[in-house]
Image 1 (cartoon, rainbow, N blue to C red):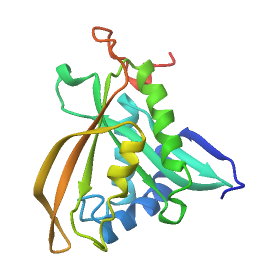
Image 2: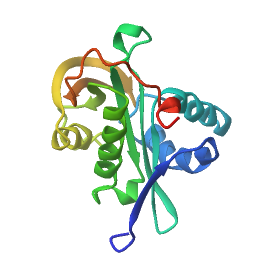
Image 3: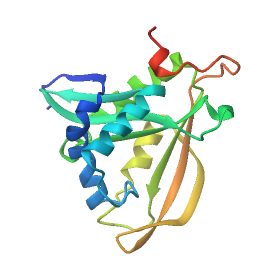
Length: 190
């Protein structure tokens, strides 16, 4: 993939099967996500469609292969929070460490600034255990490299694979343009 140019494009519900292939091992083999059941392709299509009504949902492609995706989602379902979003990113397990996640987040951030979003949040799993086969703490490290700071640490609040895991809430402020109206993604280029 090093020689393949990474192209970032907008996701479509038609991408559901490929994105689900990337996401499934995170559900079945890791504590990166606390989702325990693999969604159906139909459910995943609905998730993509719902997200695109309001926020960007991006796909990374290299050499014709989908290698990752990232999206913004609602932080809280309340108008007062419309300038704040939660981000998620998933990269094919064999393509991690090659800049795909950084490219996806950087692209998301550029779009979100245009939408007048001010705050980015990430909810990431964390463990103090060394050599946990289900969690390697690469997500907090990635978010720190992307400029996020830990603003909350919830101890032993999630349970997967017979173990308790911590959750970190991480934050990045991308704009101070408070007072500007939020622009839904579907209206951004009208």
